[in-house]
Image (cartoon, rainbow, N blue to C red; front, side, top):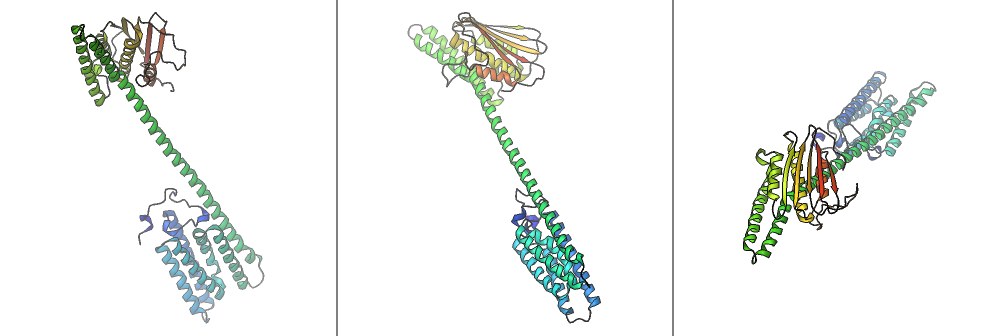
Amino acid sequence: MRHPDDHPQPPSTSPGSPASPASGAFAPGAQTRDDRLLSALLTTAFVVLLAGALLRYVLKHGDSDRLPWIVGLSVVLAVVQVAGQARPGSRRAGRVRLAVVVACWVVVVLLAPSFAWCAVPLIHTALRLLPTRSAVALVTALATLVVLAELRLADGFDPNHLLLPPVVAALATGVFVYLTREATRRQHLIDDLVRTRRELAATERREGTLAERQRLSREIHDSLAQGLSSQNMLLQAADRQWDTDPQAARTHLRTAASIAAHGLTEARRLVHDLAPADLAEGAGLAQALATLAARESRDGLTVRFHAEGPATHLPDQVASALLRTAQGALANIREHSGARTAALTLTCLDDTVALDVADDGRGFPAPEPGGTRDPLGDPDPLRGHGLPAIRARLRQLGGTLAIESTPGEGAVLTATIPLTPATPPAP
């Protein structure tokens, strides 16, 4: 038989805490270290009381005919009790041993009333092994037998002999049941806390996964998707001009090929570390925006770049967010505004960096604060992210997005990110 320590404890049972008193809580096969110590203490107390009672009987009744029976039953009681402590076994085995011990003890008490107080360890053992109702019934029977034994030993009537055993049994039972139920309630609370912690961890993992998916969708939208959209427009223009203006068609094809090459670089960069390709190899944000402006200056749209303020080394996340904002804004300008010129203005201050994207297109009614309308969004809901993606990216860094526009007079988009540590606003 394997030692009880070799068996893992159930998840709902913490070391040293009893289970429900109504369930036969303290099965020997499921004992913890504290349970084994208590069992050893009860066994020791029982053997000591048994030895004291036997010694008393031998000293006072050494010539009695009952002595062999009493000695034999005492040895059986001691052996069974010690064997149960050495090899606890299952709950069923513990109850069988308890039945054997109680039966032998009853016989011994009927033969020699001085063995009555050996019932105290038996009361605790019964409370630990049996369901509450069965344990209370057995404790009542044991206490009654102790009272009868004490009355037999007394020379005259003594109220203490009548009251002391029931009071001791009642106190032991009440304290045990209270502590057991209190431990059960505490264990239930611990289980609830553990379950809540696991649910919270699972929720955080789901939220982290969702946030990462949203971030990846914005990265792909502002890099690969915009490039593919531009290629599609160029290829369509080349197809329309292939017969009437072959030179212009070839120019569109070369531009589309250049965008495809840049998109391939972006894809590789996204796979590698999710940083914009224009910021790779140590290129600063100003240089990356200048490269973007030069690349987007085609097909009737001229993009200029201007930097204001001292050159500042920006954190990678800030530079990446502003570059992605510029990419998304220029893509929407090209597709939706009909503008002929656009301007990127990067302003670096001591504690703030701002990016303005202005165009002279058709403009749009300014969105209401807190509204859900996306004036920069793609009309195809399966394609575009537009303003929500830009605003979400800036919000993660504690930044803000402002839009000024009047129909027929173009638009200005301003993205601002603080450079000092700040707590991002709640989504």
